[in-house]
Image (cartoon, rainbow, N blue to C red; front, side, top):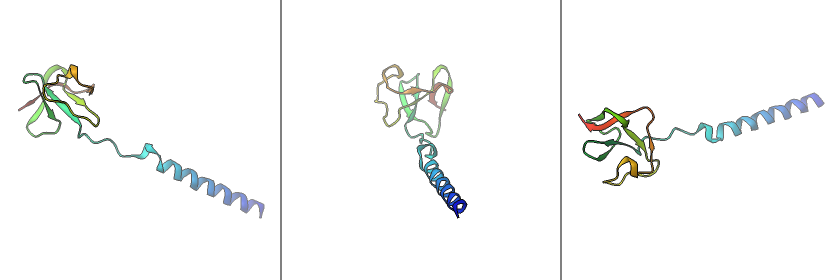
Length: 96
C-alpha cells in the first residue's frame, strides 16, 4: 500500500513538472518579422523587409534593422534610430 502511494505521488509530481515546462516562455512562438526594415543608403529611405522588388545590394553597412515594436521615422538615418542592426545581412536595401 505504501509503495502504491509513493508511485501515485511520483506520477503526480511528474505530471505537474511537465505541465510547468510546457507552459513556460521557452515554448512561445518566434517573433514575427513585421518590424524589420531595410535601409536604402543611396536614396535615404526605409522599406519594410519582405516588400516585393527589393533586396540587399552590396554595401559594407548593415542592410536590415530590427525595430522591435517601433518603426523608423522618415528622414532618420541608421545612426539616428534605436534599432538592432543585422549581423548577417549587409548592403543597401534597394529596388531591383
